[in-house]
Amino acid sequence: MNRSSLLSLTLNEIPEGRFDAFLASQIEGKSRSFIQKLIQEGYLLVDGQPYTHVRHFPEIGSEITLSEPEPIETKATPQNIPLTIYFEDKDVIVFEKPAGLVVHAGAGSHEHTLVNALLHHCKGQLSAINGVMRPGIVHRLDKETSGIMIAAKSDRAYHSLRKQFDDHSITRQYLGFVWNMPLQLEGTIEKPLGRHAHHRQKMTIKTGGKPARTDYEVLETFENNKISLVEFTLHTGRTHQIRVHMQNLGCPIIGDKVYGKDARMLETIKNSEAKEIIKNLSRHQLHAEHLGFIHPVSEQEMSFDSDLPEDMQELYENIS
Image 1: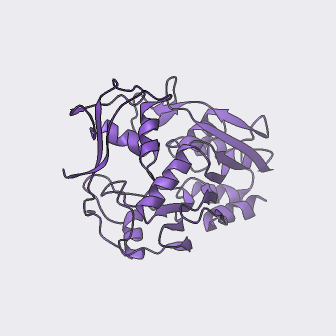
Image 2: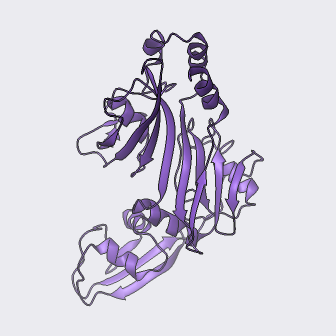
């Protein structure tokens, strides 16, 4: 693979802190997570040899070179998939991801994804930093989760947004309908997540997993506290984070076929219309309602909100 140079220097002293943080400080506009990814993929050389120790400095006098892969033309093709756009300029695009749309393709499949939609709308003008399968993608929502997302159209925007996600300065809030009512009407769930040992598509609370923190607040309860409308604030962005944390709390997301228990709970619901709506749900009832960030170029604070989608609004109106 062709490479382009990012950094070449002789280490004359050992600064305080981590090696990856030092490298990020030497390269303008590159996030530490991006530097870490380059190191893991072998793009950091010390005295001509790959060096993968992100925490520890090599010896004084070492020759350090860091490069990055040159962009490769994406395999995905533009497709005219409608998107609701909240904001767009030459650096970023903020939009609504509908439920049912996967963010990026898997191996062997490059169609009918959010990436295809963005390539069409942005006429290919998306950051290539995250690879050929995920141009412009700086975060994701589960396929069945609807709501606000942001993508990077320039490399500068990508690195700035990634840094904001890494240091948790981006504000992300979700609304979800859950079974039952938590014992505390608001609180913080701080439990590490990792892959399930036997079901590799599932996540689970796991000792030694990645740190995960979710704040929640119960906004309303229905059906004798059998159903709650809850607002979630994410401080980390782990796969299935809200869904696993709420399952662990005994309040799984309604409609969640992986972590939920709709069949058992439906027996307790007296409202026949609400029961029928839940029985026929095509996806879990979770929506990314709010996104706040600092614009990568103008440095202005930006904030966007999204109304409940039609299916969640219908459920709300029939249980209120």
